[in-house]
Image (cartoon, rainbow, N blue to C red):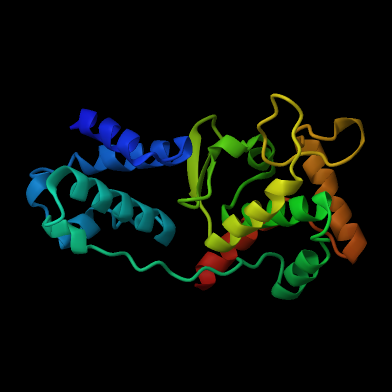
Length: 235
């Protein structure tokens, strides 16, 4: 059935990033015995995992339903499976007042303002470290499924989900993103000799530090990851 997955992905015409995401999900799916007869409850139970958030579960069930309908027909008993997509909100970091002050400080009419807003949104929503933000590539961000892939601590590839709101913020940044030839990093320098080059770890740290200096309180890139954890605990 692995061959069926490849044919399915090609026929559907998904983007490369979406194909990679769906391929992992569907290879997991076909490990289920008697897949042709699986019901909706069993499909939901298969993807109900403690370490998976709502977005990943939603994408997994959606991809599975599409494949099952393609492979077995539209009368398959699992096609009624649904994961309710929770309405996303910006995850608060620092505290709500400071985060709001930071977000409204960015000028949406400039490349730097659009980029900085995207950095904060991705860092908080996808809980990325500064090194991961630096190496994150545009080609590894899937705005259709609201997922991204990046090399994480330990040198392994990790997958993260983010909200539709963050996807829209990234979309708003893209017209201002002007990479030099061969540069695929999502977040780029916007001025000087390095304009169009990927932001380095030190460059990101300096940028975040200047945000805090401008607003009168200290900020570090680590604050964004800690905020995600704090908000998750509260929820």
